[in-house]
Length: 546
Image 1: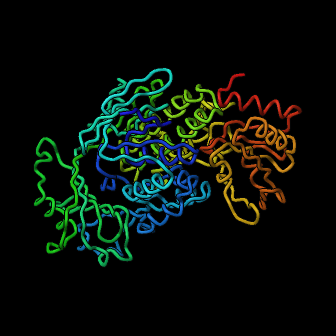
Image 2: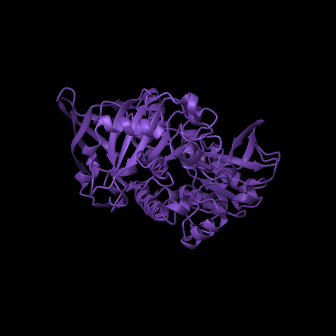
Image 3: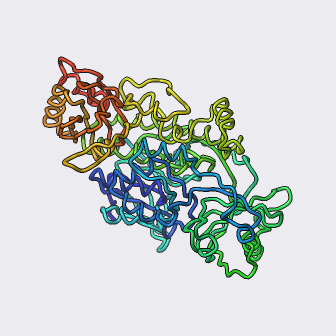
């Protein structure tokens, strides 16, 4: 059988693998994605989406589909505790906002996207449809058995689990997005110490039960059941008939085997408080809170992403968004190298950028887990305690972090603030571009909409030198580089005259924005040799040599 060739082979067909595939297709590549299971998972796993994930969906043209998928959970932004769901007056229980109202308000200031949760299985369905529509070769029931690599590519042996057939695929690069027990990571011999005793083991029960009438008008994200016989956590998946019940147990006294379907049904009906309620269990999954980061994220032409790099405790909901950010970061770099716009050294910056962020995010989630009561406490005194313990604001953890090295020039080495994300999103190289609402031909857009599949040079209203330099460099090199002058009356109208000041460039400066909306470089003022300066910056960022 002839060996198939693909530019990128992705192993793992969950959220991060599918995001990588969609992003590569957005950049004009047609990857192959293989997944050992026969389809996407039905387990919701997570529902929390931080701004970077939603901004990724926006950049890949999937915002409307994701908004539709999350519509069933619109307004489910609270947590409360009851004895049983039907036994308490839900209209009178004390509620905690999840996320807190100040985080919601800040999210709307820093991002053009919304804040509604969305079940991960729904996200995967949207991504799978987009991948298929954009020409990604998706193969379920297909397992990676082995890989070898050399200077020119990766050779992978794949097993079709349905037929038993083995065949070979040759890829320029391979991405392992195959979870915390990554086969790719194992084949590379990359160590990953996982601390898995951070809490009691749990049973995760996905079930169908019609609770629409019971909770209508009192929708929730999390409902803590305090009944001594049925204690656990109810998680809403669609506010109607699909739910998850989490139950922890003491492993010194019980094991997963002590939770057969009959007992799980009893627990669910007891927690809801309706013994006669028809309940159908869809799946049961034992798990426990773990934390870990791999020693490396790449080896030669093979890269890791998502849970294959980092296992992040669920408190704060950072895991899925961090994995999507891996995909966002890696995909444009692979595309730039494969299209000949960048030198292979650009791929080294994936490790330089994402490994420190994986460690930072894991550490922040572990801190929140250790001080769980503080995580949920909305009081100002609790905020002061969190600050003393250096527990970062959730938006700083998810969106306000800083690349201190990598495909950036002039990056600062310390974050201005762990409490105020807006201080960090100030246009500095290595930070995510600040979001400002502007207008293009009368249509309101975000500054985050201007990069897309290429770079963007965003200039102040009087920066004609930088504008001309950007246009000349783009024409000479063929690099996908959009050039936009932003200001009152400019081609990108800025009626509030905010962008130049927020981005720290003044009226004659410019920022160079990467395809993942991170600032690669900034010039606060005009430069007498702007063309040469910009060309040199792009060569350095893209690791190009003469």
